[in-house]
Length: 163
Length: 138
Image (cartoon, rainbow over all chains, first blue to last red; front, top):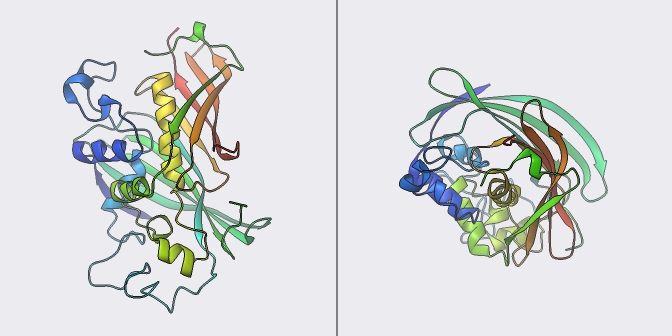
């Protein structure tokens, strides 16, 4: 069980919309957005993925002063933990349920818990271990505004898909 | 322009090209915006020499974020009730992706529509398969 804060910020929404290639001005122009049905800037549907920015322990962000597993002087900064040809964790599924739009200025609380774990033998990556996590985003009154369920799969080998 | 229930027919499909030529720079842009700096998506040397992939590839969530643009352009802002699915195949730099929503059901009682959602690359390979539902006008 982990809880963290997720402040929803206007500049962050703008950058996120740019990154997914969405030019809709409802994500960046408060005047335009005020004239639309939603009545103001809202976050795009997958924006809660960016709550990772506010997770102090998020493993996919380099930590200041600590070795990082990506390349620098050598192909990986953590050779003990990363062996060539090793398996990797990949995102298998993501599900969202939208209860209220997210808006700049919202201060959300993120509550995550582990769901089920299961294994199967895949065609592409050998033995596969799936882990589910369930996350709720709550507003300041404690009302759930968005529910998310994600599944990550860990593979034995790099995934081969013929590309 | 928000959708109207009367304008929707089960089986009808809306499609949009959501990226014409996916660049490595856009993967880096998504790393910065999302906060997910996994070297599989940002570091060609790590992805090839350490992880054993042919190169860096897109975050599944970038594909889903691009598909979300097709959905909100189609159903209107703030109208999605749900959106989810499975990542079926990797998305690589250079890919051209087309996202589609097909009407699977209309719910007159609560003014909502259900869709299947699919994202395909230029070879017709499905990279994401899922669903969405949205509030629509009567």
